[in-house]
Amino acid sequence: MIYFGFTHCPDICPEELDKMAEVVDAVKEEYGDHVLTPVFITCDPLRDTAEVVKDYVQDFHPDLIGFTGSPEELKQVARSYRVYSYTPPNVSVDDDYLVDHSIFIYLMDPQGKFIDCYARDTTSDEVLHSFKNYMKDYLQDGGKLKSKK
Picture 1 (cartoon, rainbow, N blue to C red):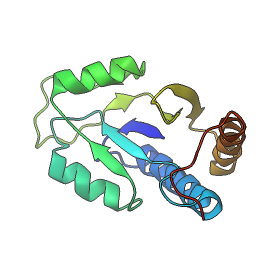
Picture 2: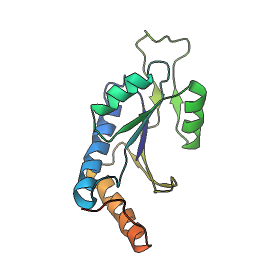
Picture 3: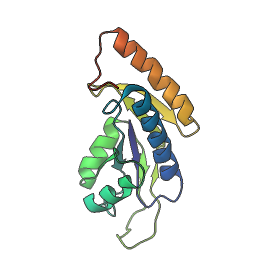
């Protein structure tokens, strides 16, 4: 699962990352470790350094992997997922500003191909149910799990 956000987000990003953490824990309970990897990618490279992102993601789940990069790299990654983001012009690292961005959790298959996305109003139970349906199809098609309980 992949989510694009920023570490200074006051409410929406933390809510979505909590939702991802709930889903990851439920998947681990049913299928074992290393089945679903949660990923956070920043939309705010100005303030979200590698150290900031590393500390931030650990507040949500120990398995959550955080990414940052140059503005150009992050713009290219966001574009590949069709993620919208907008940072006000002429801001500095010390400014208090919000980054406007798409609010979706993306579900990818083991090969990194897009499977589905979930909007803000999708509950963790709905995401889990959707994941289980995709997992059932994946296993029926001969897919294997890295680890089983």
